Length: 179
Image (cartoon, rainbow, N blue to C red):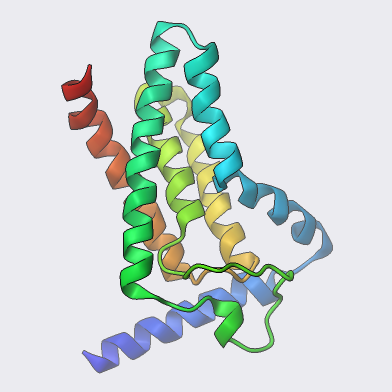
C-alpha cells in the first residue's frame, strides 16, 4: 500500500509541476486568474440567482436545481476539507509559481472545481447541446487551480467527482422529490 501511495504522490507532484511550472507563460498567467473565477463564489451564486430571478418557469426551475446541487457540493467539500486538512501546494512545494494567492482553508478537495463541475453537470443534463463547451470550461477551472498553485491534481480530480456525482444525484433524485 505504501508503494501505491508513494507512486500516486509522485505522479501528483509531477503533473502539478507540469501544469504550474512547465506550461507557464504570460498569456496563461493572466488568463488563468479569470478562468478560476468561474468556479468562485461570486460567479456561481450570481449565476444561480440570475437564473431564478430572471428566468421563466423552466429556467427558474433550472436555477433552483443548480443552486441545490451547488449547495450540496459546497457542503460536502467543506466537510472533507476539515477532515483531510491537506496543506496547499504553495505551503509545501518549492520552486513553483504562486501568484501571491493566500487562502486560509485547506487544499483537498478543490471547491472551485467541484462548483464548476456541479453547475456544468446540471446544465448538461438539462441542455445536452452545451455539454462540450460547458465541460471544457469546468475542466479549465480545474486546470487553473493547479496552474495557480492552490491545488494538487488529486484535489482537482476529487472536485470533479464530487461536483459531478452530487449534481447527478440532485438531478435524478432530489429534484423529483422537491418538484
